[in-house]
Amino acid sequence: MIPAARRDCPGTDRRGAGHASCHHGEILQGTFLDAAGRRCAGLVTLPMGGPGSRAEFTRRPGTPPEALTVRPGDRTKAARAAALAVEECARRCGEPPCGGELRLAGDIPVGLGMGSSTSDVIAVVRAVADSYGTRLPAAAVARLAVRAELACDPLMLDARPVLFAQREGRVLEVLGRRLPPLVVVGCALGGGAPVDTLSLPARVHDDHDVRAFERLRVLLRRAVATGDAGLLGRVATASARRGQRVLCHPEFDALVGIGRRLGAVGVQIAHSGAVAGLLLDPAAPGLRHRIRGCVRALESDGIPATRTFTTFPNSPSPPMPKESPSGPAHRGGHRPTGSDTPRRPARLPAL
Image (tube, rainbow, N blue to C red; front, side, top):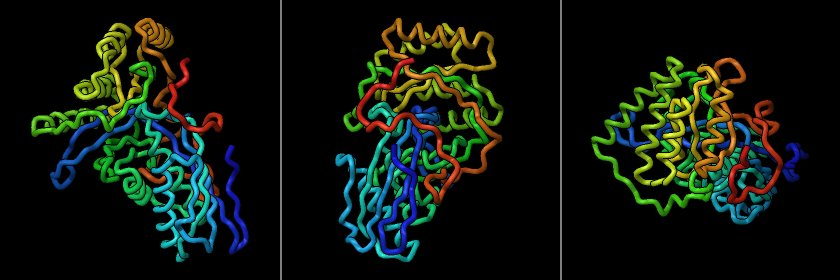
């Protein structure tokens, strides 16, 4: 396990730690209009606690900034994020940029559409900032994440539902205070094999598509405002159907059929991966029976069930979106994580 960050005397190595959670794919993704009427890609993710990325950065004052080592060595996006974060934090603190050593660990499966690369990048940015004894605002973290990986998920924000422009790193709209209460029975399509999003055909959205996405945006805003799980399920299912035009998951119809038979309010699928979920309204009767039925039906159709989780908040309504805490400079807000195993292409453990 990565040890807690420490503070050393001036002129010696400075160590910082950072953490970032993952998500369970998207509730809605498409092309939307911003406040100026300009088209831009946007998404609303389904937050999920548990798996995450952890980073430790030890900076070496006095060394050249290119003297940066990364372990594991294949984390190229994380390496870019570290270099960008060092430049940003050094400028803010009035110090010259320097080199250092970055270590990454985590337990987010790769290629399932759970934001594994963004989680790595954000954990790295937080660790670098912590090594400087500072805390970057969410907007700055988002900007660095986009520069490091061209597009990012809104994992630097709290769990408040937002429509996020992933290629620009900005919030298009805060949809409300929190998602309606939901129980999500997760699964992995395609046997849980990673999806190569770069190989997928690019889809250009026309005016008709944009109008459809804007209608879904309005419905999702209403679902959040009224706590309507059923309406959110309809939006998620409609978005998943549109994503299916590119992803072409052969199990999609079976997944929708299972949800319909067992009283799910909808289905949710990552638009850039294989992770999916059946959305259940916890207020409807027979919740435990419906959860067990969903798991059995998924397994019967050859769709591996992964984990069941909820959108229930553990505390009063959260404040406006802000950068989540990490490291001694951000004490007090880490989400629980699993064992400290290296991140690798893997399937989520079945229940």
